Amino acid sequence: MSEAPRFQPPRFGTDGVRGRAGEPPMDAETLRRIGAALGVWLQREGGADKKVLIGNDGRASAEWILAALVGGLNATEVTAIDVGLLTTPALAYLTRREPVQAGIMISASHNPADDNGIKIFGHDGAKLPDAAEREIEQLTETVSFTPGDRLRVKPRRELTDHYLEHLANLFPALDLGGRRVVLDAAHGGGSRLGPALLRGFGAEVIEVGCAPDGHNINAGVGALHPGHVARAVLANHARLGISLDGDGDRGIFVDETGTVRDGDEVMMVLAIDRMRRGQLPGNTLVATVMSNLGLHHALRRHGITVVVTPVGDRAVVQAMRAGGYGLGGEQSGHIVFAGDAAYTGDGLYTALQLLSLPGALQDGLARLFSEFRRYPQVLINVQVARKPPLDQVPAVQTAIQAVETALAGDGRVLLRYSGTERLCRVMVEGQDAATVQAHAERLAAAVREALA
Image 1: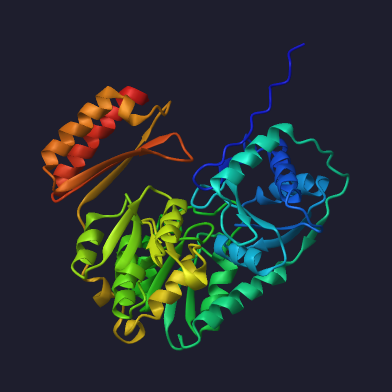
Image 2 (image 1 turned 180 degrees about the horizontal axis):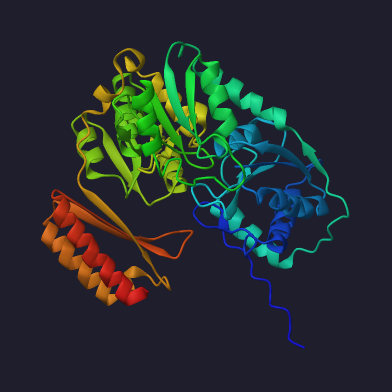
């Protein structure tokens, strides 16, 4: 008789644990172990009555994933509180607000509906530090528990109202009466919160992608597909278009001219506005290596420094905390604010920030974005079979050196692996679009030949 396969502990990536729902690490057994491991980790801190908030972004698999997590938590004497459909930033806020020790968001962000994942937050609403995640990974291998016959989970869907009240209180002067706003929630976590929030400020909301059925999240809608919103903005003469990703922690925006604006452009206008008001600590913005050179050039003209980090909001937050900076983010639309937003990316909060900019409602946002001059940038995702350190792949290094020599200092090359998929992301930036495309294809071919 063959032995049962040995349990493989999950590995937390750049944004939690993620994968195809039903397959390791997103299978019921692994998730029960994660729940139990988190419970043990929380119990080590001492005290009684440990509680964990759990929310989801609307995927069909969320129901059984919730049950698996709760089974592990209950077995370690931790109470689970189900807040239902909401965004990741809403879950993070409620974890800070409520008397709980942790929060778990069931979401795979921008991934297709068949995927899912979990993000774990501490009692302060921040993602767990790397050391805590490593400890939970190890505990999944050794934790001993017996799931009970009945799950003990308290439904508290009304808690999401506190998040809406929180944002309303942060923008007391914002009046969207008589204004149209297009919102695409990607059929995800913001599908109910987003329209309710904007209508609370008096806006007429044109809904796109706000009807989740468990299987349509990110399906041709949301932050990866802002064209729907651009067309709706023009058709409805809207003041702003908002495209959230599945869990609402980032947004891509469309101004009144129907022009799509990504995170780099949003960071530019917010940084310049804050600097003018003396609210940009150190006159510094934190951005990742993926941000366009156009952002650097635009901010340099205003005396604003850009601190560059690796990809991922975790790296942005770490740099912001270390330097005492107040604003940072990613080209993908994940904008991070210190202060009221507590270093949590929130597409809806960012939208309210844009709508509150001087003249935004009267004159529109297009004029504020007009200063941005984008360098042509090409990003190619190459499927790989393995992920050795790229600096140890001679053929790839030779190709990189050749492209960098050709760019002659007026552009840049970036190759990195995806933290959640078997992909190598090849990015080239420079002055001429055709040349950049050719360089990117050359590098992609080198990666494909060496690693596919």
